[in-house]
Length: 104
Length: 159
Image 1 (tube, one colour):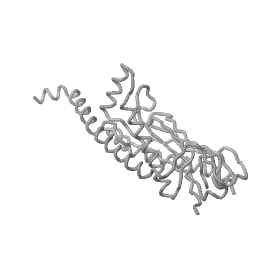
Image 2 (cartoon, helix red, strand yellow):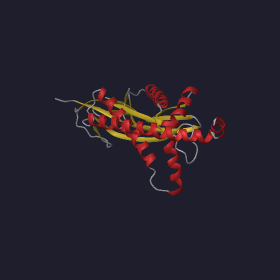
Image 3 (cartoon, each protein chain N blue to C red):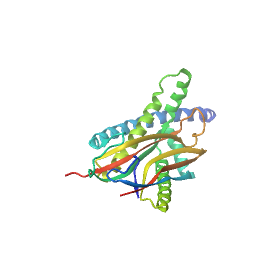
Image 4 (cartoon, one colour):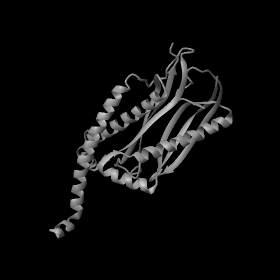
């Protein structure tokens, strides 16, 4: 599955459009990571646990999106956008959407 | 003596947090900026544009999505400064540098991923920030922020 966030796939031609595909996941962090983040809030700096958590969840959202595209018969997703929103305290939703296309 | 310490434990803890936050936060920030500047110099050859590229037929070999992100949090001392700033208004320097660091680090991570896969340039860069963590839904509080950078890496056909 080719993924890009421009309107086309550079170097390839779009032959068929399938419409919007999307994938999302809501994740909460676990207790241990949360405690570490609480300590880190005192001294500042990167919260590595959160960075990893968000990367993983974003990857999962993208996997779901590409699975949807595969079922439609597409071989690429173009114009991908990401959105993050905090739905509840301590939980975040990661959302990815794009247009499924077939390229040659 | 011990009684006096125990009686004013909250004040002592507060002072301890302030001192700890100031010293650790300042050291960490300086070290981080140093590494950012060094890595930015190393990766300056990898072109990064926020426009959609137009490529001639046959010029592009491969293209793929790359992304980088960083979650960063302020220290206790700077948060205190920012609260004080809320009274008088003006530039909140403490948060300016925080967001600047997160964004530049996210872009660097994206560039590193692209460079590792042999890309020659990144087009259509998009940057996003969001507040996460416990204070995400509360007003007037910035706990930790996430900066996300993503774009399309392009591998050219070079003769």
